[in-house]
Image (cartoon, rainbow, N blue to C red; front, side):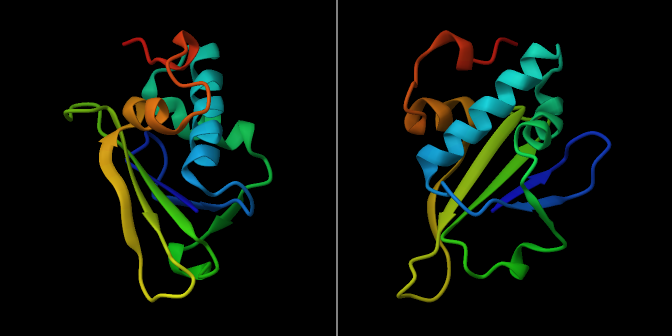
Length: 129
């Protein structure tokens, strides 16, 4: 599950994608969205639109509580005046236990991609400000 906050022209957006919810899968999805955003000439505030374009199968949710079967949850926040324009926090929900456990973050999205993307360190994934 992916939650996006602070993106221009959007309220809070919660999306469910049924597969590849682990951090490597999330990094692949977010990396593709970032590349689409950059190809369109948009800045980091265009990440949500790029994500929606790349992942047409994403199911919109009114609240993150509607999908309790998720094992991972990601919060992506856009704050243009903040320390990091894009930051992410990730949680994991162990099936045998109650509640969410923080997996990482909040960290800069580029740091998340370097850590979890299978092609980390490639220039095309680096955000050029």
